[in-house]
Length: 69
Image (cartoon, rainbow, N blue to C red; front, side, top):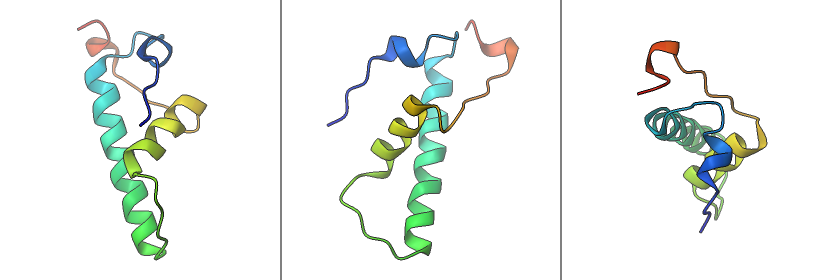
């Protein structure tokens, strides 16, 4: 199970809500891509999405008005 340090991910005043929403959207996109290409993997799409966010391959852009909620 992947258990990343949230302080590292949330360092740029990113809200937890934005992180969860973006992770879910990216995980859905990954699942759709894998299904489309008929690729079977043992890793879960959510784990793959979190890894992409940690590596910086997937950047979350959050509106300024909700950054400090």
